[in-house]
Image 1: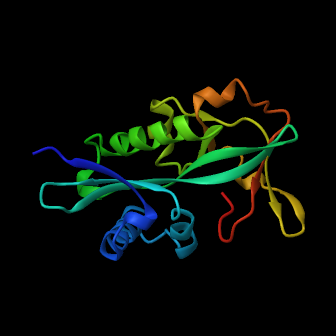
Image 2: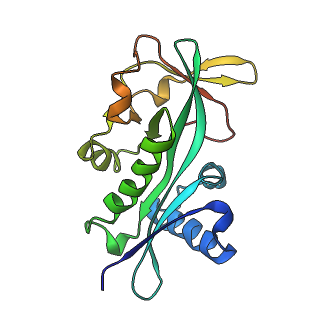
Length: 180
């Protein structure tokens, strides 16, 4: 039997479903997924893939963020917490999750963005996401903070590339933990 995909807002997930997704992130990121990272994944739409027994195999979410670009604040569909169980990898489940999230991003936001790990970058590149070549900053409590450590890790949806000017950079909204 084929895995099943479900999309739901955080508010529509049960505590057990949220706990299963959080546990999956811990396992998928070998314990390198902090509480702040999980917090960033909440408040938006989740894509969950289950096997025939109901076991969660893959997860991702998209949340709204704001980015200042060329003097305008844009609505960003920011992809978070994409992970697949180790024993279910290389079966297209990450692509299944991303397909659902990309539909949401493309239909509901000015553009999509995400910060990819070295392991995840190939999945995003294969799906047409493009590495953002410009400056990355965030509007922090003390003003705009340049984030050179994030440059080279941020990807945007292809539709946005033509409408964004890398020479102006992106200034994202601030959040606790890893800003991006």
